[in-house]
Length: 177
Image (cartoon, rainbow, N blue to C red):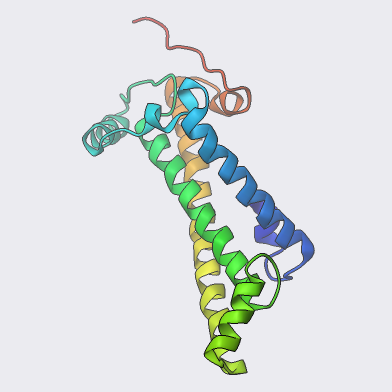
């Protein structure tokens, strides 16, 4: 995402291919969320709103429960990040298609011919998708920052290395109390 974000103004091949890579990673993560290991499955970490609100209250009070998998906020952040990354990549592909490139180019070109669109209509369609793409990218960047802050906070609160756990997929159970 950082590579795609930093190369966004250039509309370079690096930007385009990093976007496709992000889409591939997101699709793999969605499949892994259904068929993957216990703690990677969506069914393991999507909690009810009530459970999540209790977790937030306890977190603010400095006594949040420890979870071996995602905590309730982490679960919702995962869903939100995946959703926003899908929005960013799909709108990027739409922009690229309106420009006459990529997998949606054929559909976009046929739509313009069928609708007898003028150059101005094509430019406004491109601007529309570009605006959504930019806003979604900025929201995603903000979510990434919040996610990092959440990981640091949770790591500090529970005295554990969540970054290592994200890399290895292994997390130690909390000590008995």
